[in-house]
Length: 589
Ligand code: GLY
Image 1 (cartoon, rainbow, N blue to C red):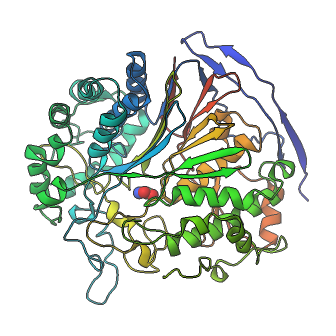
Image 2: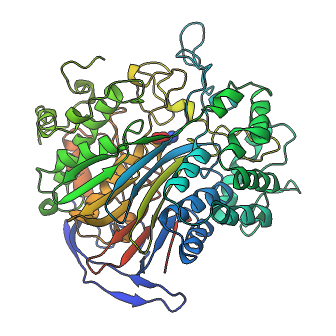
Image 3: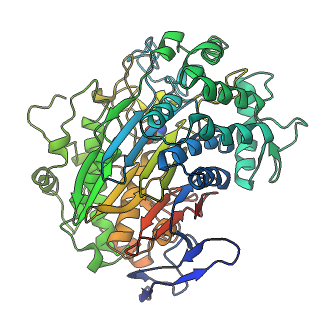
């Protein structure tokens, strides 16, 4: 029989000065309970400490990108200026996900409390059609939506940044672009993880871009930590964007290069007209409440905001805090909420410019209460018995996230992506930038899972000019009308559940921002009917209890999430929580 030990992690606020930096390191704040069989087991991936800052803070996937954002804040820029600079810097220093050839979502809460969001998600090209990835027998052709030129949607990142900056930026556009140009020209020192990533994909890049030197080491050797990645062609593209704004990407020389690239080898379908016609969408964010908190998140075509609100409201009636972090009851309720929410995602969500989404109903308390009707604590619900809810009248790892807060408390939450790591692996010749493989986020055929195992339906079928459904969940929370938290992560379908857990870890379990990021995580997405968990995330007792109720559990050999988040303390100080699972870094001042 397992020995059950109750470990009570009791923390008091402790701020110690880090002698190597201008910052202080915030240790921890809360009280929570963790049940485990092993007295040495901890609830955290590791014990990294949060970064505390008084004025402003940038948390991103790469130290050089966070440094760029900080440089802009120190120069008098606001959170939007810093976010735009970080987005372009990530395209240089973190090419697996940072991008100009992809898209994403930006959520802004201004210092006056106004919330807005920008959808710069990719769009299906005009020549796209519902059956474009099916063979003559109607079967999905493997990899066609994942690798190569046909996998790309029309990129949105440059337009998204240009519009955000034009409306809310303070510093000149030229100034916010310059750090990325310098990084591309002077070279980026490779971290061990970035070097490893390049080694994994360099052969595939050569296959899809014969004879290319992009992302290859001149000597043909393997990349190693400390090597310099210089990207002169990318610097020139960024300079054109710096000079001409959006038109520097969507028109003229860069557009020509991109279309030429589409006409090579396996042939893509993005045209000059697709590029010049690309427009971002300013969307009303999803705004709802969880207890005393206001949740501001991304509306469709991301499923993130609706799903996060559904998850929080589904668990709200349950005493998670009393049950304790990762106790069997807490986990069970969270899994069952996730099962129902992902079933709704598959049935109802898509691009709101093309399908009618019943957002109000999906997030309505009565509707959500109905979704619990078949739940019992004695047994796992079978995903086969769960369909999207019934709504009368209704027919029918790689991404990257960064968070910025400035001295006035403007807050920006951005998640951006090429979809898979290094996207379609097609590099635009002459431009040196990678194209996305976002078309795989559409439902290629009803009921057939995409690369994240997500099932889709008619609502997310391909159509010309339509945006593919996303799971990206850039989110901002308010408490008592004041900025409280900025949160987000990459991770495909696991984004929503990682954000959900990170929010609950702080609000219910009293963790600091960094502890909440460090905390081990799990994921369920309705289908496949499986709960994935990071090693040590569940105690032996929890595992036994869940298995006895019929839950299928699978311990991951890799990790979940690369969170980059900011928490505002009661004292007004900021705490950056950046994920120790990656190169993620918070820098504040
Ligand atoms: N490409 C991942 C997502 O948008 O959810």
